[in-house]
Length: 190
Image (cartoon, rainbow, N blue to C red):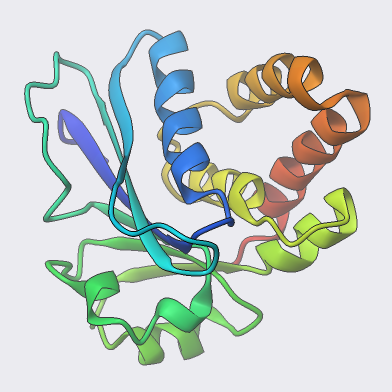
């Protein structure tokens, strides 16, 4: 991504961690000396309801304070949302899609209906169940996002997760999330 700012729009369902992922990526970008923002779109959030999150990462001060309308990257934490027009809204052939799904990138590209866009797929739900015992795909999706875009360093993200999650959740959850990020980074397909 050669421009001064990368804009990432996250689509998920309440309880999948889209808000947390958007903010974690922004925090790591700050730690790496970049400028960033990470925030959710608030509405009638409830478990399972569609939600959106936003992350901006730039080399200059970010003066925008609004939802992302023309994303460079779209991250989808639940592939049942792919048919929602909001997922592909204002995207084009230069948009990168990172989707949590069992299906291939070619099949997902066809389902999205966006010609020429780069599509990355990873089964983040399976990874999160394997590594954490729960279907919370946000940290594996961060690993897939990093592989697809290089927007932040995977090493910085893993250190940040270890530090933050160790205090809050303990060793097992912290290490499970690190493993989930690593696995998704390795297993994502394009």
